[in-house]
Image (tube, rainbow, N blue to C red; front, top):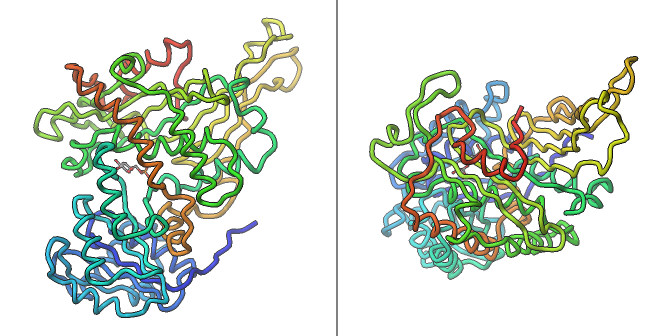
Length: 490
Ligand code: BG6
Protein backbone atom coordinates (compact mmCIF):
# COMPACT_ATOMS: atom_id res chain seq x y z
CA UNK A 1 0.00 0.00 0.00
CA UNK A 2 1.34 3.44 -0.82
CA UNK A 3 1.05 6.42 1.49
CA UNK A 4 -2.11 8.43 1.28
CA UNK A 5 -2.43 12.19 1.50
CA UNK A 6 -5.60 13.48 3.10
CA UNK A 7 -5.68 17.29 2.76
CA UNK A 8 -6.45 19.16 5.96
CA UNK A 9 -8.85 22.11 6.20
CA UNK A 10 -7.33 25.56 5.67
CA UNK A 11 -5.67 26.95 8.77
CA UNK A 12 -3.57 29.83 10.07
CA UNK A 13 -0.40 28.88 11.89
CA UNK A 14 1.16 31.71 13.84
CA UNK A 15 4.66 30.85 14.96
CA UNK A 16 5.97 32.83 17.93
CA UNK A 17 9.73 32.46 17.76
CA UNK A 18 9.31 32.52 14.00
CA UNK A 19 12.99 33.38 13.41
CA UNK A 20 14.30 30.93 15.98
CA UNK A 21 16.11 27.63 15.74
CA UNK A 22 13.04 25.38 15.95
CA UNK A 23 11.17 27.34 13.28
CA UNK A 24 14.19 27.29 10.98
CA UNK A 25 15.21 23.65 11.40
CA UNK A 26 11.88 21.95 11.90
CA UNK A 27 8.65 23.94 11.56
CA UNK A 28 9.20 25.70 8.23
CA UNK A 29 10.69 22.59 6.58
CA UNK A 30 7.82 20.46 7.94
CA UNK A 31 5.14 22.84 6.65
CA UNK A 32 6.90 23.02 3.29
CA UNK A 33 6.90 19.21 3.07
CA UNK A 34 3.15 19.18 3.67
CA UNK A 35 2.77 21.76 0.90
CA UNK A 36 4.85 19.55 -1.38
CA UNK A 37 2.76 16.56 -0.35
CA UNK A 38 -0.41 18.38 -1.41
CA UNK A 39 -1.86 18.46 2.08
CA UNK A 40 -2.37 22.22 2.55
CA UNK A 41 -5.64 23.66 1.28
CA UNK A 42 -6.46 27.24 0.33
CA UNK A 43 -6.21 29.70 2.06
CA UNK A 44 -3.72 28.24 4.59
CA UNK A 45 -1.34 30.88 5.97
CA UNK A 46 1.83 30.81 8.01
CA UNK A 47 2.62 33.94 10.01
CA UNK A 48 6.03 34.28 11.60
CA UNK A 49 6.05 36.39 14.76
CA UNK A 50 9.15 37.50 16.56
CA UNK A 51 10.61 40.56 18.23
CA UNK A 52 13.00 41.76 15.54
CA UNK A 53 11.63 44.00 12.80
CA UNK A 54 11.67 42.27 9.42
CA UNK A 55 9.79 42.74 6.16
CA UNK A 56 7.59 40.02 4.70
CA UNK A 57 10.10 39.60 1.90
CA UNK A 58 13.00 39.16 4.30
CA UNK A 59 11.05 36.59 6.25
CA UNK A 60 10.22 34.72 3.05
CA UNK A 61 13.95 34.73 2.24
CA UNK A 62 14.61 33.34 5.72
CA UNK A 63 12.00 30.61 5.11
CA UNK A 64 13.43 29.76 1.69
CA UNK A 65 16.92 29.46 3.15
CA UNK A 66 15.59 27.23 5.92
CA UNK A 67 14.06 24.94 3.30
CA UNK A 68 17.29 24.93 1.30
CA UNK A 69 19.31 24.04 4.33
CA UNK A 70 17.08 21.56 6.11
CA UNK A 71 15.30 19.75 3.29
CA UNK A 72 17.11 17.23 1.08
CA UNK A 73 18.14 18.80 -2.26
CA UNK A 74 16.07 16.18 -4.08
CA UNK A 75 13.00 17.39 -2.19
CA UNK A 76 13.56 21.07 -3.02
CA UNK A 77 11.08 22.01 -5.74
CA UNK A 78 11.20 25.73 -6.63
CA UNK A 79 7.62 25.74 -7.86
CA UNK A 80 6.38 24.27 -4.56
CA UNK A 81 8.66 26.58 -2.60
CA UNK A 82 7.14 29.60 -4.34
CA UNK A 83 3.61 28.38 -3.64
CA UNK A 84 4.60 27.82 -0.04
CA UNK A 85 6.21 31.24 0.35
CA UNK A 86 3.05 32.88 -0.97
CA UNK A 87 1.40 31.67 2.26
CA UNK A 88 4.07 33.17 4.49
CA UNK A 89 4.10 36.58 6.16
CA UNK A 90 5.73 38.18 9.18
CA UNK A 91 4.78 40.50 12.03
CA UNK A 92 7.20 41.94 14.61
CA UNK A 93 5.62 41.32 18.01
CA UNK A 94 7.01 41.72 21.49
CA UNK A 95 5.72 39.05 23.85
CA UNK A 96 6.46 41.15 26.91
CA UNK A 97 4.86 44.45 25.86
CA UNK A 98 1.96 45.63 23.69
CA UNK A 99 4.25 46.38 20.76
CA UNK A 100 3.07 44.75 17.58
CA UNK A 101 -0.09 43.10 18.92
CA UNK A 102 -2.52 45.31 17.03
CA UNK A 103 -0.52 44.62 13.86
CA UNK A 104 -0.67 40.88 14.56
CA UNK A 105 -4.42 41.08 15.10
CA UNK A 106 -4.82 42.95 11.82
CA UNK A 107 -2.69 40.39 9.98
CA UNK A 108 -4.69 37.48 11.36
CA UNK A 109 -8.02 39.12 10.53
CA UNK A 110 -11.50 38.26 11.72
CA UNK A 111 -12.01 34.83 10.24
CA UNK A 112 -13.26 32.55 13.00
CA UNK A 113 -14.24 29.62 10.77
CA UNK A 114 -10.75 28.27 10.26
CA UNK A 115 -8.38 26.63 12.69
CA UNK A 116 -5.98 29.14 14.17
CA UNK A 117 -2.92 27.49 15.69
CA UNK A 118 -0.51 29.51 17.81
CA UNK A 119 2.84 27.73 17.99
CA UNK A 120 4.91 28.87 20.98
CA UNK A 121 8.42 28.06 19.74
CA UNK A 122 9.83 30.31 22.46
CA UNK A 123 11.19 29.99 25.98
CA UNK A 124 8.54 28.80 28.47
CA UNK A 125 9.21 31.99 30.43
CA UNK A 126 7.17 33.77 27.71
CA UNK A 127 4.16 31.42 27.78
CA UNK A 128 2.30 33.49 30.39
CA UNK A 129 2.84 36.81 28.58
CA UNK A 130 1.84 35.42 25.21
CA UNK A 131 -1.24 33.55 26.34
CA UNK A 132 -2.60 36.45 28.38
CA UNK A 133 -2.14 38.85 25.43
CA UNK A 134 -3.76 36.38 23.05
CA UNK A 135 -6.74 36.59 25.37
CA UNK A 136 -6.76 40.34 25.93
CA UNK A 137 -6.40 41.04 22.20
CA UNK A 138 -9.33 38.67 21.62
CA UNK A 139 -7.34 36.37 19.35
CA UNK A 140 -8.75 33.18 20.83
CA UNK A 141 -11.93 31.66 19.42
CA UNK A 142 -13.46 28.18 19.44
CA UNK A 143 -11.19 26.86 16.70
CA UNK A 144 -8.03 28.28 18.22
CA UNK A 145 -5.29 25.88 19.34
CA UNK A 146 -2.06 26.43 21.13
CA UNK A 147 1.03 24.31 20.62
CA UNK A 148 3.66 24.24 23.31
CA UNK A 149 7.05 22.60 23.24
CA UNK A 150 8.83 20.88 26.06
CA UNK A 151 10.23 21.61 28.59
CA UNK A 152 6.89 21.95 30.35
CA UNK A 153 8.48 23.15 33.58
CA UNK A 154 11.72 22.13 35.24
CA UNK A 155 10.05 20.29 38.11
CA UNK A 156 6.58 19.36 39.31
CA UNK A 157 5.76 22.74 40.78
CA UNK A 158 6.83 24.81 37.78
CA UNK A 159 5.02 22.39 35.44
CA UNK A 160 1.80 22.86 37.40
CA UNK A 161 2.28 26.64 37.26
CA UNK A 162 2.89 26.59 33.48
CA UNK A 163 -0.12 24.39 32.86
CA UNK A 164 -2.23 26.72 35.01
CA UNK A 165 -1.04 29.73 33.04
CA UNK A 166 -2.01 28.24 29.71
CA UNK A 167 -5.13 26.68 31.23
CA UNK A 168 -6.46 30.12 32.20
CA UNK A 169 -6.81 30.97 28.53
CA UNK A 170 -7.25 27.64 26.73
CA UNK A 171 -9.33 24.52 27.43
CA UNK A 172 -7.39 21.27 27.63
CA UNK A 173 -8.82 20.26 24.20
CA UNK A 174 -7.17 23.33 22.69
CA UNK A 175 -3.72 22.64 24.16
CA UNK A 176 -1.27 20.54 22.16
CA UNK A 177 1.83 19.68 24.19
CA UNK A 178 4.39 18.42 21.71
CA UNK A 179 6.69 15.55 22.44
CA UNK A 180 8.16 15.12 19.00
CA UNK A 181 9.18 11.52 19.74
CA UNK A 182 5.49 10.59 19.56
CA UNK A 183 5.40 11.80 15.96
CA UNK A 184 8.28 9.58 14.86
CA UNK A 185 7.21 6.95 12.38
CA UNK A 186 8.69 3.99 14.27
CA UNK A 187 7.20 5.13 17.55
CA UNK A 188 3.77 4.97 16.00
CA UNK A 189 4.73 1.65 14.52
CA UNK A 190 5.22 0.36 18.03
CA UNK A 191 1.46 0.63 18.48
CA UNK A 192 0.85 -1.19 15.19
CA UNK A 193 3.31 -3.90 16.17
CA UNK A 194 1.67 -4.44 19.55
CA UNK A 195 -1.98 -4.02 18.70
CA UNK A 196 -2.32 -5.04 15.05
CA UNK A 197 -0.62 -8.41 15.53
CA UNK A 198 -1.89 -11.33 17.57
CA UNK A 199 1.65 -12.61 18.01
CA UNK A 200 3.15 -10.36 20.65
CA UNK A 201 0.41 -9.38 23.06
CA UNK A 202 0.04 -12.82 24.74
CA UNK A 203 3.79 -12.79 25.43
CA UNK A 204 3.98 -9.13 26.44
CA UNK A 205 4.27 -9.57 30.21
CA UNK A 206 6.51 -10.66 33.04
CA UNK A 207 5.92 -14.35 32.36
CA UNK A 208 7.70 -14.11 29.00
CA UNK A 209 9.73 -10.92 28.97
CA UNK A 210 13.00 -10.81 30.87
CA UNK A 211 13.68 -7.08 30.58
CA UNK A 212 13.34 -4.05 28.32
CA UNK A 213 16.00 -1.54 27.29
CA UNK A 214 15.34 1.92 25.91
CA UNK A 215 18.36 3.75 24.53
CA UNK A 216 18.31 7.22 23.01
CA UNK A 217 21.95 7.90 22.16
CA UNK A 218 23.19 11.06 20.51
CA UNK A 219 26.62 11.76 19.09
CA UNK A 220 26.17 15.54 19.19
CA UNK A 221 27.30 17.72 22.08
CA UNK A 222 25.86 21.04 23.21
CA UNK A 223 25.09 22.45 19.73
CA UNK A 224 24.96 26.13 20.83
CA UNK A 225 22.26 25.33 23.39
CA UNK A 226 24.47 25.69 26.46
CA UNK A 227 22.21 28.29 28.08
CA UNK A 228 19.23 25.96 28.13
CA UNK A 229 20.98 22.61 28.43
CA UNK A 230 23.14 23.42 31.41
CA UNK A 231 20.05 24.34 33.43
CA UNK A 232 18.24 21.20 32.28
CA UNK A 233 20.52 18.16 31.92
CA UNK A 234 19.70 14.79 30.39
CA UNK A 235 17.05 13.77 32.92
CA UNK A 236 14.87 16.82 32.29
CA UNK A 237 15.76 17.16 28.61
CA UNK A 238 15.23 13.57 27.46
CA UNK A 239 13.97 11.25 30.19
CA UNK A 240 11.04 13.21 31.66
CA UNK A 241 9.44 13.43 28.22
CA UNK A 242 10.78 11.39 25.29
CA UNK A 243 12.00 8.29 27.12
CA UNK A 244 9.06 8.14 29.51
CA UNK A 245 6.67 8.41 26.59
CA UNK A 246 8.44 5.52 24.87
CA UNK A 247 8.25 3.52 28.07
CA UNK A 248 4.50 4.19 28.24
CA UNK A 249 3.92 2.94 24.71
CA UNK A 250 5.85 -0.26 25.41
CA UNK A 251 4.21 -0.92 28.75
CA UNK A 252 0.62 0.34 28.48
CA UNK A 253 -2.41 -1.93 28.40
CA UNK A 254 -4.22 -2.15 25.05
CA UNK A 255 -6.36 0.99 24.84
CA UNK A 256 -10.01 0.53 23.86
CA UNK A 257 -9.39 2.55 20.70
CA UNK A 258 -6.95 5.03 19.19
CA UNK A 259 -8.99 7.90 20.63
CA UNK A 260 -6.77 10.45 22.31
CA UNK A 261 -8.10 9.90 25.79
CA UNK A 262 -8.26 6.12 25.48
CA UNK A 263 -4.52 6.06 24.68
CA UNK A 264 -3.58 8.73 27.19
CA UNK A 265 -5.53 7.07 30.01
CA UNK A 266 -3.44 3.93 29.52
CA UNK A 267 -0.15 5.85 29.37
CA UNK A 268 -1.08 7.67 32.54
CA UNK A 269 -1.60 4.37 34.39
CA UNK A 270 1.93 3.33 33.47
CA UNK A 271 3.40 6.59 34.73
CA UNK A 272 1.51 6.24 37.97
CA UNK A 273 2.72 2.64 38.42
CA UNK A 274 6.42 3.48 38.25
CA UNK A 275 8.17 2.51 41.49
CA UNK A 276 9.54 5.62 43.17
CA UNK A 277 13.26 6.33 43.06
CA UNK A 278 14.28 8.45 46.02
CA UNK A 279 17.42 9.24 47.99
CA UNK A 280 17.01 5.79 49.61
CA UNK A 281 17.56 3.82 46.40
CA UNK A 282 18.80 6.31 43.77
CA UNK A 283 22.40 5.20 44.21
CA UNK A 284 21.68 1.67 43.06
CA UNK A 285 19.14 2.56 40.36
CA UNK A 286 20.52 5.63 38.61
CA UNK A 287 23.80 6.74 37.03
CA UNK A 288 24.64 10.31 36.04
CA UNK A 289 27.47 11.03 33.64
CA UNK A 290 29.20 13.98 32.01
CA UNK A 291 31.37 13.73 28.90
CA UNK A 292 35.05 14.49 28.91
CA UNK A 293 37.16 15.30 25.85
CA UNK A 294 37.32 12.45 23.35
CA UNK A 295 36.53 11.65 19.75
CA UNK A 296 33.21 11.77 17.98
CA UNK A 297 32.35 11.23 14.31
CA UNK A 298 36.04 10.70 13.64
CA UNK A 299 37.26 14.01 15.10
CA UNK A 300 38.58 15.21 18.46
CA UNK A 301 35.91 16.94 20.55
CA UNK A 302 36.00 19.01 23.72
CA UNK A 303 34.61 17.88 27.03
CA UNK A 304 31.36 19.34 28.35
CA UNK A 305 33.09 21.73 30.75
CA UNK A 306 35.44 23.03 28.04
CA UNK A 307 32.47 23.59 25.71
CA UNK A 308 30.64 25.39 28.49
CA UNK A 309 33.70 27.33 29.67
CA UNK A 310 32.68 27.11 33.32
CA UNK A 311 32.37 24.33 35.90
CA UNK A 312 29.09 22.45 36.05
CA UNK A 313 27.60 19.34 37.59
CA UNK A 314 24.90 19.01 34.93
CA UNK A 315 24.53 15.45 33.65
CA UNK A 316 24.88 14.80 29.92
CA UNK A 317 24.17 11.10 30.40
CA UNK A 318 21.72 9.19 32.52
CA UNK A 319 20.97 5.52 33.01
CA UNK A 320 18.10 4.29 35.15
CA UNK A 321 16.77 0.92 36.17
CA UNK A 322 13.02 1.50 36.38
CA UNK A 323 10.30 -0.85 37.59
CA UNK A 324 6.61 -0.75 36.83
CA UNK A 325 4.72 -2.01 39.82
CA UNK A 326 1.65 -3.61 38.27
CA UNK A 327 0.44 -7.12 37.43
CA UNK A 328 1.82 -7.14 33.91
CA UNK A 329 5.31 -5.88 34.66
CA UNK A 330 6.24 -6.60 38.28
CA UNK A 331 9.79 -7.92 38.34
CA UNK A 332 10.67 -6.84 34.76
CA UNK A 333 13.36 -4.15 34.80
CA UNK A 334 13.19 -1.35 32.25
CA UNK A 335 16.74 -0.10 31.69
CA UNK A 336 16.72 3.44 30.30
CA UNK A 337 19.73 5.36 29.03
CA UNK A 338 20.38 8.50 27.09
CA UNK A 339 23.31 10.79 26.57
CA UNK A 340 25.14 13.27 24.42
CA UNK A 341 28.49 12.53 22.76
CA UNK A 342 27.94 8.79 22.85
CA UNK A 343 29.52 6.33 20.43
CA UNK A 344 26.84 6.83 17.78
CA UNK A 345 23.43 8.30 17.14
CA UNK A 346 21.14 5.39 17.76
CA UNK A 347 17.76 5.10 19.42
CA UNK A 348 16.16 1.77 20.02
CA UNK A 349 13.83 -0.22 22.19
CA UNK A 350 14.96 -3.76 22.91
CA UNK A 351 12.50 -6.25 24.33
CA UNK A 352 14.39 -9.32 25.61
CA UNK A 353 12.30 -12.43 26.03
CA UNK A 354 13.02 -15.06 28.66
CA UNK A 355 15.31 -17.95 27.71
CA UNK A 356 13.76 -21.25 26.71
CA UNK A 357 13.08 -23.36 29.82
CA UNK A 358 15.14 -26.35 28.66
CA UNK A 359 17.40 -27.07 25.70
CA UNK A 360 17.09 -30.37 23.88
CA UNK A 361 20.20 -29.59 21.81
CA UNK A 362 23.64 -30.85 22.72
CA UNK A 363 26.64 -28.62 23.32
CA UNK A 364 27.80 -28.95 19.71
CA UNK A 365 24.65 -27.12 18.56
CA UNK A 366 25.92 -23.94 20.16
CA UNK A 367 24.28 -21.62 22.64
CA UNK A 368 20.55 -20.99 22.48
CA UNK A 369 20.19 -17.23 22.70
CA UNK A 370 16.94 -15.74 24.02
CA UNK A 371 14.65 -14.03 21.51
CA UNK A 372 14.92 -10.30 21.20
CA UNK A 373 12.71 -7.75 19.51
CA UNK A 374 14.72 -4.71 18.49
CA UNK A 375 12.71 -1.67 17.47
CA UNK A 376 15.05 0.81 15.89
CA UNK A 377 13.74 4.36 16.05
CA UNK A 378 16.58 6.13 14.28
CA UNK A 379 18.54 6.20 12.12
CA UNK A 380 17.76 3.25 9.77
CA UNK A 381 14.28 2.78 11.17
CA UNK A 382 13.04 -0.76 11.34
CA UNK A 383 12.21 -3.76 13.45
CA UNK A 384 14.25 -6.90 13.90
CA UNK A 385 12.94 -10.01 15.60
CA UNK A 386 15.94 -12.10 16.58
CA UNK A 387 15.27 -15.86 16.48
CA UNK A 388 17.18 -19.12 16.65
CA UNK A 389 17.25 -21.24 13.47
CA UNK A 390 19.18 -24.24 12.29
CA UNK A 391 22.28 -23.30 10.36
CA UNK A 392 21.43 -24.49 6.82
CA UNK A 393 23.33 -27.34 5.21
CA UNK A 394 25.11 -30.41 6.45
CA UNK A 395 27.21 -30.53 9.60
CA UNK A 396 24.63 -31.65 12.12
CA UNK A 397 22.30 -29.56 14.18
CA UNK A 398 24.02 -26.22 14.64
CA UNK A 399 21.95 -23.29 15.83
CA UNK A 400 22.22 -19.73 14.66
CA UNK A 401 20.81 -16.44 16.03
CA UNK A 402 19.37 -14.45 13.10
CA UNK A 403 17.04 -11.50 12.64
CA UNK A 404 13.73 -11.38 10.82
CA UNK A 405 14.48 -7.99 9.38
CA UNK A 406 11.98 -5.23 8.57
CA UNK A 407 14.23 -2.31 7.77
CA UNK A 408 11.69 0.20 6.56
CA UNK A 409 13.83 1.93 3.95
CA UNK A 410 14.24 -1.41 2.19
CA UNK A 411 10.77 -2.80 2.74
CA UNK A 412 8.81 0.34 1.81
CA UNK A 413 10.02 2.82 -0.74
CA UNK A 414 8.11 5.60 1.06
CA UNK A 415 9.92 8.61 2.51
CA UNK A 416 9.71 8.74 6.27
CA UNK A 417 8.15 12.08 7.24
CA UNK A 418 9.66 14.15 10.00
CA UNK A 419 7.76 13.96 13.27
CA UNK A 420 6.74 17.63 13.07
CA UNK A 421 4.94 17.11 9.76
CA UNK A 422 2.60 14.58 11.27
CA UNK A 423 2.16 16.45 14.53
CA UNK A 424 1.29 19.84 13.00
CA UNK A 425 -1.28 18.19 10.74
CA UNK A 426 -2.76 16.45 13.82
CA UNK A 427 -3.10 19.85 15.51
CA UNK A 428 -5.10 21.09 12.54
CA UNK A 429 -7.25 17.96 12.59
CA UNK A 430 -7.73 18.41 16.34
CA UNK A 431 -6.36 14.92 17.08
CA UNK A 432 -4.58 14.87 20.44
CA UNK A 433 -3.59 11.18 20.49
CA UNK A 434 0.10 11.97 19.99
CA UNK A 435 0.21 14.89 22.43
CA UNK A 436 0.75 14.85 26.17
CA UNK A 437 -2.22 15.48 28.38
CA UNK A 438 -1.77 17.70 31.40
CA UNK A 439 -2.02 14.85 33.91
CA UNK A 440 0.64 12.85 32.04
CA UNK A 441 3.11 15.72 32.32
CA UNK A 442 2.37 15.99 36.02
CA UNK A 443 2.71 12.23 36.59
CA UNK A 444 6.05 12.17 34.75
CA UNK A 445 7.38 14.97 36.96
CA UNK A 446 6.07 13.19 40.05
CA UNK A 447 8.45 10.35 39.23
CA UNK A 448 11.35 12.54 38.10
CA UNK A 449 11.28 15.08 40.93
CA UNK A 450 12.45 12.70 43.69
CA UNK A 451 15.34 11.58 41.45
CA UNK A 452 16.40 15.19 40.99
CA UNK A 453 16.15 15.72 44.74
CA UNK A 454 18.16 12.58 45.49
CA UNK A 455 20.92 13.76 43.14
CA UNK A 456 20.88 17.25 44.62
CA UNK A 457 21.42 15.76 48.07
CA UNK A 458 24.58 13.87 47.12
CA UNK A 459 27.86 15.70 47.04
CA UNK A 460 29.04 13.50 44.20
CA UNK A 461 29.60 15.01 40.74
CA UNK A 462 28.41 13.04 37.70
CA UNK A 463 30.76 10.23 36.62
CA UNK A 464 33.01 11.19 33.72
CA UNK A 465 32.95 9.36 30.40
CA UNK A 466 35.07 9.86 27.34
CA UNK A 467 33.20 11.42 24.43
CA UNK A 468 32.56 8.79 21.78
CA UNK A 469 31.97 5.91 24.22
CA UNK A 470 28.76 4.40 25.62
CA UNK A 471 28.85 6.37 28.87
CA UNK A 472 30.41 5.88 32.29
CA UNK A 473 31.45 2.43 33.48
CA UNK A 474 28.89 2.71 36.28
CA UNK A 475 26.16 2.49 33.61
CA UNK A 476 27.59 -0.81 32.45
CA UNK A 477 27.77 -2.00 36.04
CA UNK A 478 24.12 -0.97 36.56
CA UNK A 479 22.90 -3.64 34.15
CA UNK A 480 25.72 -6.18 34.56
CA UNK A 481 24.99 -6.47 38.28
CA UNK A 482 21.77 -8.13 37.11
CA UNK A 483 23.65 -10.50 34.77
CA UNK A 484 22.44 -8.64 31.72
CA UNK A 485 24.23 -6.45 29.18
CA UNK A 486 23.32 -3.37 27.17
CA UNK A 487 22.37 -4.19 23.62
CA UNK A 488 25.05 -2.69 21.41
CA UNK A 489 23.29 -0.72 18.65
CA UNK A 490 24.39 -1.89 15.18
C1 BG6 B 1 15.16 17.45 22.04
C2 BG6 B 1 16.23 17.69 23.06
O1 BG6 B 1 13.90 17.39 22.65
O2 BG6 B 1 15.41 16.22 21.38
C3 BG6 B 1 17.59 17.69 22.42
O3 BG6 B 1 16.00 18.94 23.69
C4 BG6 B 1 17.80 16.44 21.62
O4 BG6 B 1 18.62 17.84 23.39
C5 BG6 B 1 16.65 16.19 20.67
O5 BG6 B 1 19.01 16.59 20.87
C6 BG6 B 1 16.75 14.83 20.00
O6 BG6 B 1 15.76 14.72 19.02
P1 BG6 B 1 15.97 13.76 17.76
O7 BG6 B 1 14.66 13.82 17.05
O8 BG6 B 1 17.12 14.32 16.99
O9 BG6 B 1 16.28 12.41 18.33
